[in-house]
Length: 140
Image (cartoon, rainbow, N blue to C red; front, side, top):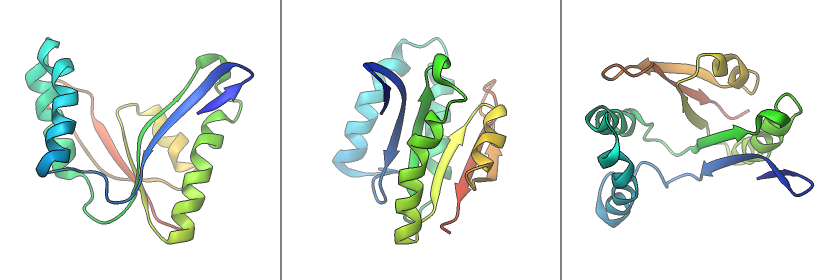
């Protein structure tokens, strides 16, 4: 989390190597149960379920750092908050020689993540969803 005084300026949720994807066992069950309420209530729950399954199926199998979420309060965008949330984990990934991985459905984000060394490795669509780009960054 990045703060500006008492205000939250941005957040990043990184999963360390070996945590995702949980494809079997109790961890997979717990992850599925956490997502279930949002899927069941949604008008497009079938599409959401298919998208989640496709994301899991296409997720890299080798050890990596996974950026699940990166968000910056609009009032703090273009002030280095995203960089401050990305760089420490990317440096750690470089130290241990592991890639980093993320997905985005926002085409404008592709150029942003490329500045940090991420490259598009694949993209796909499910139902009427926007394309989802998969990006990976090799350790330096």
